[in-house]
Every structure is written in structure tokens, then in C-alpha cells.
Amino acid sequence: MKKYCLIVCIILLPLLVVAQKKEIKAYSIELNLPHLKSEKVYLGRYVMGKPYSNDSIVLDTKGRGVFQGSKPLDEGLFMLYFTDGKYVDFMVGNEQHISVKGDTLHLPANLQFSGASQTKDFFQYMRFLTTLQQDYGRKQEQLKATVDDDTKKQVEKELEALSQQLLTQQNELIANYPTGMVSVFIKGLRIPDMPEDVENQATSDSLKQVMRYLFYKKHYFDNVNFSDIRTYNTPYIVSNLETYLNRVLVQHPDSIVPAAIDLVEKSKGNDKTFQMMTSFMLNYGVKSTMMGMDKLMVELGNRYYLTGKATWADSTLIESLRKEIKKIETSLVGMKASNMYLANEKGEYSDFYSMFGEQLTVLYFFEPDCGHCKKVTPLLRSFYEKYKNDKRINIVAVYMLLDKKEWSDFIEKNQLQAFTNVWDPNRVSRFWELYDASTTPMMYVMDKNKKILAKKIDVETLEMIVKYELK
Image 1 (cartoon, helix red, strand yellow):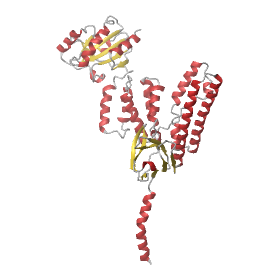
Image 2 (image 1 turned 180 degrees about the vertical axis):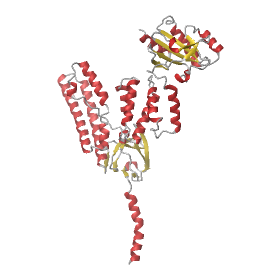
Image 3 (image 1 turned 60 degrees about the vertical axis):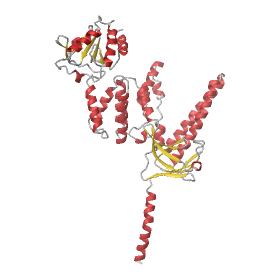
Image 4 (image 1 turned 180 degrees about the horizontal axis):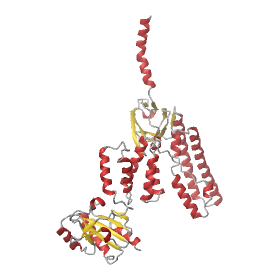
């Protein structure tokens, strides 16, 4: 009897292992799309606003197939992409056994999602949204074509009713799944309205406008949890961040840099979210064409990368950042210009501050053999012709090399006698450490308080600055 039981157990063991293997499938997305038999289907996901391929399968001769895996999918918005070029978005929440059936002839109407309630309900919401958008568009066209005031009022009421329907649908989903991905998704699109009691405190329309802006700026991301990884698995997260940085905030580094750092701090509750936000902001700062935004790279580098907090960054990136920060951190826009000692053609050294104009000073680094310097220098001289006797502005032109004849010939050839021409034959000024002159020509503008107003500018921009500052 014992031997018989042992044999039975040995026979059943493989079946038990197979059963266990089936049970550990953490997710499955079963497809039943008869019109796409033997076709390839791709499973994609959104990360930081971009779609990425996650997996692909070939459907069988009946149009059936399944995406599955032993590890759960990251919750977020996913897509099914079909070989006919069509695709459909759907949501993956904490329930991850999903069934999809229908066809792709008319999306999303002809598809049905089942199995996972959050996925099914969100897809129904998307179908509702498609219909609502169509109705809204028709009503707007009707409103444009209407001249009768009573009819206009009626159409406006109908538009308001459609907006209310959308709000009701969203609130129901949030109430049904208060901690679910669907709530993360919908809340992420909502910007809080200023409370009426706060708005009513304004004593004038202009003050009300200011209060609205300040509230809008402060509370723009109230409904977003930047330490929740699901926030980053949406198609709109990057566009929302860029709208905030590029349009909501005052377009000046002193406004943008603190706000960017604040968002990074808010992402620190999770290693992945911290990495995503910090990397996004570093990339934003590096790519920005706004003058002075190199300050963001310096702030991020010193706070997170060079302190070891950015654990994902490899040694190559760290060293590259270290070199770049060292090059620019002493000459950022808004900082006080560093003093240094430079020599005239006679070899007499003077401090840089003594060369300042009464209101503006242009610091111009150049090399005679630099092709771009050959083009810019004559333009700079022509610009300065009308200011050469104006004590409010002075141009300090720094020859960066050590060949005095080359320097003197360049001054003579380009008729730069009106400039304050200096160099550093004894290499005592350390200008290469105090100012970023890694590319030439390099131009800085300082005000009467020796603060750096602008850097890396062309002559056209210089003219605009001077006209504004000396008006």
C-alpha cells in the first residue's frame, strides 16, 4: 500500500509542478481577434510620455494568442499595436489577467476588455470619451454658426452639460478605484481651481488675475504624486512637466531652477521615480536654449550626482559632469564677476574691476586663428563705434594666447584700438578657471554692480541688451 501511494505521488508530481507553473503567471492578456489570424501583435507601454515595445506574439489561425509573464507588469497605460497600423490604449492596474476580443475595424467601439475590472471600466470610459469628444465638437461648430442669442445660450448650456458628464464619469472612476491606476491617471490631468472664497478676496480684476496665476503656479501639481512610479507610466507626464516649466513659470532661471529642484525633491520617495525626475531635469537643463539655464545643471550636479545620491549614474557621466560644472560654476548668469589681473600691450598689469564701464562691461575672449572670432570681432568693433566715447560702457577684449606679435597684428588689422585690449603673458590671472572660455569667441556682459547679466551671446543680442540697459 505504501509503495502504491509512492508511485501515485511520483506520477502526480509533474502534474503538480505544471499546475504550480500556471498559477505563478503574474499577468496574462488573452487576445481573441479572428480577423487577425496568424498576424503579429505588439504589446507596448508608456514610460515618460513615450511608447516602448514590451512584447510581441503571433496569433494562431483562429486569431488567438496570449501575452503572459511570471512577473507583474508595472501599472500604467499600455497599448496593443496591430500590423494594419492601428493601435488601442488600455490600462493595466493591479488586476492583470485580461481578455480582449472583437476586431480592429472600428476602434475602440469594436473591442471588449474583460477580466480585470479596472481595465474594463477604464476602456469603457475611453469609449465614452470618444463619443463625448465627437458631440462636443459638433456643438462647438453649431455655436460658431449660430447668430441667434437664445440658440447660442442653449448650445452653451448643452456644452456645459457635456463637461459635467465628463466630470461625473471621472469622479465615479476615482471613487471606485481611489488608490488605483485609473485615479492616478485621471488626477494627473486635473489642475485645481482656486477656491471662490480666496478669489473673492481680490479687490480688482488685475489683483484677481495675479492671485489666479499665483494659485495656479503653486498648486499646478497638487493632484500628482511624483514618488509614485505609476505617474511616469502615462503618455502625458512629460508634456505636463514641459508646460509647467516653459509656460506656467516665469521664464527666468531664478524661477525655473528652484521649481525644478522642488520637483526632484518630491520624487525622492522611490528610487526609480527619483532617477526619472532627476534625469529628466538634467536633460532639460542641458538642452535648454535659455540664457543662464546652465545653473540648473550645476545645481543638480552638486546636489545629487557629485554627492553620490544619483546611484544610477556611472563613472563616465559623473566625471563628465564634474568637469563641466568646474568649467562654468564660477561664471553663471546672476553671479558677481570674478576679479583678475590682466596686462596691456606694454605688459602693465591692472585688475579687471578697474576696467569696468560706469554701467556696462563687455568681456570678450578671443583667439586670432579662431574662424568664428574672425567673423564676430569686426561686428563687435562696428557695434562699439557709436559707444567708444561713452563712459557708461567698455569692452575688455582678452587675447587668450601668448604670441604678442599675433595679438598686436590682430588688433591692428581689425582696428580694435577703442577696446581695452589685455592678455596674460605670465599666466597669473587664472581667467580659464574663473570664466568659461572653453569655446571662442566668448562674450559676457556685466552691470555696474559687477553682476553677470548675460553670457555666450552674439553681437545682435548684445545690441539689444545695451539699448535696454542704457536707454
